[in-house]
Image (cartoon, rainbow, N blue to C red; front, side):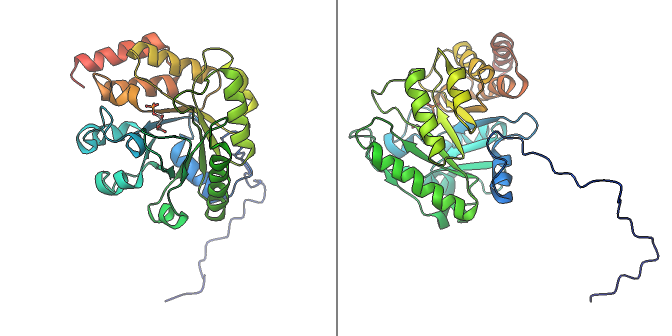
Length: 294
Ligand code: R5P
């Protein structure tokens, strides 16, 4: 039953305190709407401004990749240590407990398998499905310089339009396929194009030289993919350098789930990303956890 406000307590308007109007913590995201920012805060930790995304969407073009044969057995135990899971809707529905309450980044493009031309992708999800699955963002591959370059750019721009309509961020993934270059000159071109065409944030590969120039020239946050499995110290060193050179996090798959001790590895990656830990200290932490059987 509604009732009139008859409280005897004097009203407090705090007329001497100006209303707070804080800038949003993520680069290039200040002009986005509330829902979009709220979803981004589910991916990036507002305290560090960074993210450890656990990527295990590889099956969408290459089937049961080593380490991903049984996602319920191998990946679900890692979920509590990730800020966000990057995966397909098929795996989300069948393997991930709906009680998981951090970010979900849905793979939104697909088509060709590893047996054919990888750049020949189309959008592979509808916006209502992403909403139904409570996605924090949708991810699309863009093959700059690839055979189906324009088609993949159109996939990106259509996804950005759909996402903007409903407040769902778009992660533009600069894909290199089997043989495109991975140097800073190429990645500067690819990341800048993807950002200018509307991606909310961008995923790319770390470049040994001049990564700071591409992170600076990209007006939205950049996260790096892990790429092929490396020795743990090398993977931690790559993540550390990327962060120090301006990356806002990692979207790492094989270097975590193919590690001898995946839980120890993802916890060590968190140290590098969220606490600016040195590669050596993070590696020692990894080994300690591994020796404890974690
Ligand atoms: C690539 O197929 C997927 O987009 C992966 O999510 C991405 O490559 C990150 O995984 P990894 O660290 O294994 O390269």
